[in-house]
Length: 342
Image (cartoon, rainbow, N blue to C red; front, side, top):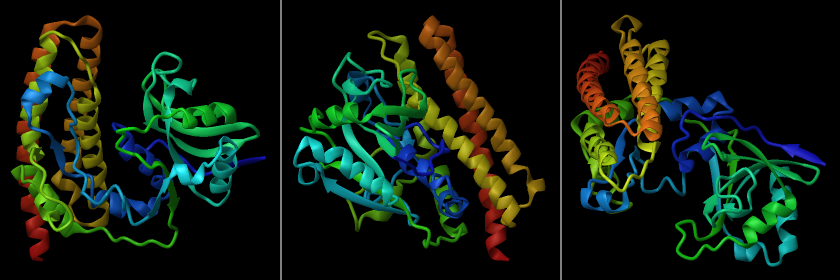
């Protein structure tokens, strides 16, 4: 008894609400026009008082307010109340295996205390989502963050996942339904949208509040957008110099993934004829990507050494990256304006 659905390491892994759907989508090249038309704008909250208190920062790609329900035209999403599905402990395994047999990826909210590959295993109760994409005899096959914090494949016994689901306390959890199904839509179609790309690049450069474009769906969200996220990120990193020490690499990781996505998008636009390769935009963004990768590595080194000099060097490097990106975006938008006028 064995069944596995396609899965891969996606271009964005900093947060699971990106990583899980993209791990499914990235198995098919058809999704690329949609992906390259999105994942451009950046967002982070601007409440520095709250930052100092909680010592965390949700520096992230901007998400539309409706994206929780409709992530991509290539992905069918179903939200289920697990209490209606799992009426007894014996319902869990048959339901999940039946979903996989029908081509559905299953994302239950679990208590990672019971997941052997989790950093929380038998140390603390931690409610989190996991993504199951296959089974082999009495073992489920999934993907998520392992003990080392890497996004990777894992295996879990049927009985272990049963316990992880049954003991998950969803009181106050943002995913209170506790169960989500994904299925790739082979019949979906989305053409690359150069006008949308230009709009988002302009929002990125001008630090425009992109959530105002969706006010018919939800009220606009205050915060820092686009290049205005750099000062917020710097304030957060600077807080590492002051006790109590609390470290989170995800903001720097997202910044690095943002530059990787920009490089791939620009190469795609060059191949498709939206930009001339001799303009050199993908090569210049590749240099930004390498510099943000160095920032990420320096912060990981700081986690071990606690050397204040590393933080000061990171802050200086971020200033240079922000200045270079602003210049690049100005030139890029100028070329795109010329393209659209033809």
